[in-house]
Image (cartoon, rainbow, N blue to C red; front, side, top):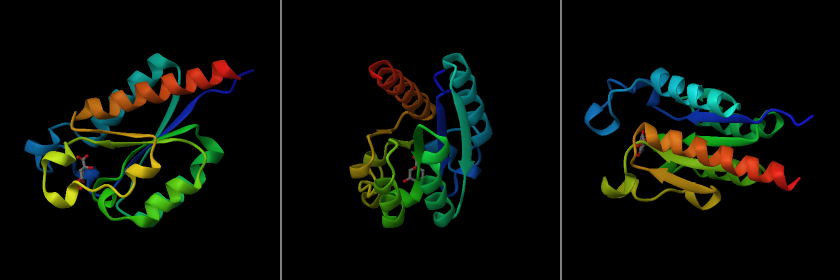
Length: 153
Ligand code: DQA
């Protein structure tokens, strides 16, 4: 029997403050509202989804290292770590499962220091600027990719 598809959503530093953190940039949805919407969509797709938010680089590195044991795909909003964490980049490069980079805001229309993503070159692709739809679209792409892979087996 084919095993259930499992997707891990990782949220980086300060994303626990969504809803009250700079709502003009990040919107008014809280992190648990975003997770709930992703859960509903995942349920429609029949895939399992798990979430982790951390303000600590090492915890995210560890989660990425462990992910291949339990998950088929990672959706990652690395938040500020996107712009400077070589440790996160190396962890992504070290694993076999694909990672999609996500941002609620359009990082290219903001401050210069946000234009650079050190993780982008080791991710499958990046989605930036669509609020919660950045996450939902990434989930849809992950499911489509995994279904295609399963068909080829
Ligand atoms: C963010 C963009 C980052 O530049 C910022 O540091 C964040 C959130 C986004 O989702 O738009 O914390 O990743």
